Amino acid sequence: MNWTPLTESTQLEEVDARSAEKPVLIFKHSTRCNISSAALGRLERAWTEADDAAHTTYFLDLLKHRDISDAIAARYGVEHGSPQALVIRNGECVEHSAHFGITYKELLSSLSKA
Image (cartoon, rainbow, N blue to C red):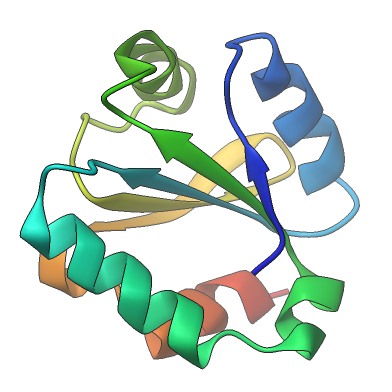
């Protein structure tokens, strides 16, 4: 996956702007959590080059940037979770999932909705 690292809360403006052009996926990951590692691994193994072309993906390391996770929660009205995947379209979170609810099939379906 062609992840764009989320390292500054100001990047959320970029997320919103890009989400007006094509859906954006934000993946919030805890490097200390086995569930998070499993969800990330499943997603990365299933993701294709065509998926990268169709969608923009951002990766948030929660242990390094908890403040950005808090900014995401406030901005998109979604309670913090880890791991957590959010689909952003036109500056709004239209779908989100956490833990074992994060699946390639469900995310791709959410990202592909008109």
